[in-house]
Image 1 (cartoon, helix red, strand yellow):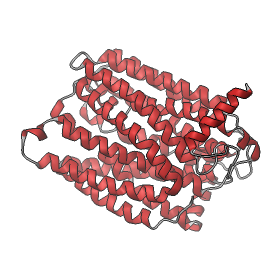
Image 2 (tube, one colour; image 1 turned 90 degrees about the vertical axis):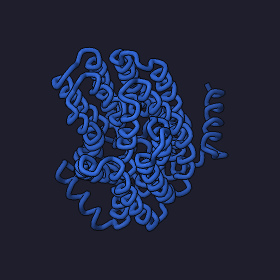
Image 3 (cartoon, rainbow, N blue to C red; image 1 turned 60 degrees about the horizontal axis):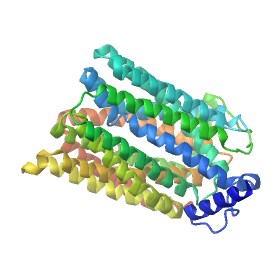
Image 4 (tube, rainbow, N blue to C red; image 1 turned 90 degrees about the horizontal axis):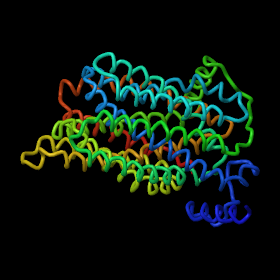
Length: 437
């Protein structure tokens, strides 16, 4: 057992670039001793979560499911806002509840189990659902999945802040994204091989794998050795809201961070429209879906470890550089839609831009996640994360609705140029943020 612990510590030191796994910052001494073991449990948990997210993606997989079921087109427009905002909006309401618990991994496990249940239910609908009733059932289940995702999100970040030291958190998220990207790549390859074959069974299998991946997430989270934390300052929902609003007034850096994060929504909002442009060229067959899933997996494998390392050095610069990438991808995607030539009538150019934007979006996610965890302390981390996510959820619903209306009016290509302008604002905002590492 001791030999296994030594090997685990050496692998941990190699992955993090740290010559001594016993050196810790910002976590208790007891947690420091368990850090190598907890690092790999976090890695397995994140692998399960990220793989499940990809295989139940509201940007790719669920629109295909709705199309196969024959659900109304207007229902498809609700998928991404429900998926994102449903996971973010309620978090400030549960932050105070989580704060009352000395150990928070139980909340994480509960959220993962609920997500697994939702994924299995979606798999059943892929086999038996149809029409408006089936589409409505997908949206209802997606609400449950998104709310459960919110529980796991805030609890997992709080547990990470208690068990993984500063300057290692971005590295952890980067490696987990890379491993999950490899697994997603395999799933996308299988879809490409299926081509024009009936998709009901294939989508049911994908969603079933997503369910088992969330079970892996729950099991790994349950095995993390978490040191009890402070429980003072727990609030009810209204108390959490009042405290959060006061934080926005008192902590100018936190307010500035949330402005930058809101503007960086442009990367998330651009992805479905680039995918839509590609889908218009390839149709709704599984080959086109498989290509986009493969591209997403390759992008995650390439991007996550690099962004993770960079985020541990300066998460502010990662957000700024990701904003630059968003501008370029939006302009490039719009230009393909307007350029003449047969090559623009294929899904491949859009798949290329989609992959580049996925790389950029990983930078946005890793940069802002690392920034908010590092800027906060053990006493206020859960509330900072919850409040920031709730603000983003509100903006996602509002901005997503506005962008959907503009896309209907102007077209997807013109909307991408508007999102490029938003990303330019994100660059200036992130550039002015202070360093927190």
